[in-house]
Length: 453
Image 1: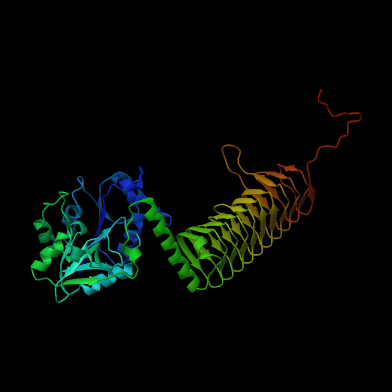
Image 2: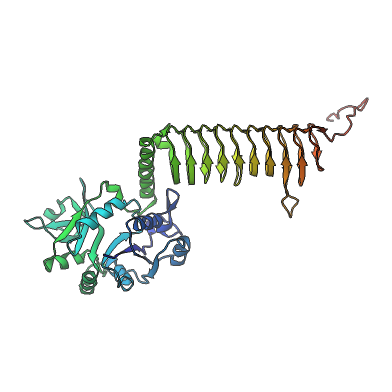
């Protein structure tokens, strides 16, 4: 059975009070619509159609990496009308599943359950039981428990409003039947819109047994209408992510102060202090310890390494038992071998640091190859950019770079070499030798400091 997915994403989202289309507002670091497209991919949908409206070009550009088709709903005439726009793209599908671009937390397992329970019938609905169903359409059933129709709250009787089973909007239907039902729904209502919910009564009127399933958590079917709801779903997402990590052997100092905005692969006995933010794809090996207020993005941290407070690790690889921070910044293509030390206010970019090397204070290394067992003194910089070109600095094993030195690339410092403090090294320094550039020290006899008049 070929499954097609229609994702409704045409809403203006006025209550967001934003120029950004609602479905592009981020949750856990990616657009709301991206979460729904990911769920559609995970259930094996063969055709994915996004119905767009407001900000269509912007939405398509932001989600250009996804394999889906785009259909415009030029006039906002209701959910039924939106699905009608997508149906011509579904002609090769056997079944059609309707999802929503502003309902980001729907779980693939819940969708699979809905697909399974409706496998032998022509229509399935995802419903939910709420303690307070105010504002939702109610599911009406007959004496045998069969679904007969959906009634909107404003049209419901007092008895119908007491029903706690609500319509979530998610449905799956036989494609040919859905085509027929959509052709029969009208817009003779207060809004002048074509409601997808009217399909339910048409199906029941034909004697179709309507299957139902329910989500594990009500947050799965909660939509985003304003920034308050977006923030609420963000915390729910983060809490679930934190719980999964803790059950897999990760220690979180405070699950409420952790943000996953990408993918985290964490081995057992990893420890994350408060306010750690994960972006992109991050891999943490066993025994890694991350201090408070750190940002880790697209990086790999080796076993036993420790990242102290207030560090930014972006696009870097850190070896086993390395010691980083506090207040260090590793930029893309920084490659640190095992047992390295990088201290406070050190920035490293596109540089390899050999085993056991130390860069402990106030230093910038860019476009460099640093050997093993090197000590780089405080205030050292590699002058790698002349305003046009980037050039390489190479430092051999066991070299000692004195404090406040400037290495003007391209330049080589030999193995075992020592660079005297305060030197500007613009030519190669030979191995096992002391190289320095230093003006003579002068004392001016009789000089007096100026005094204010």
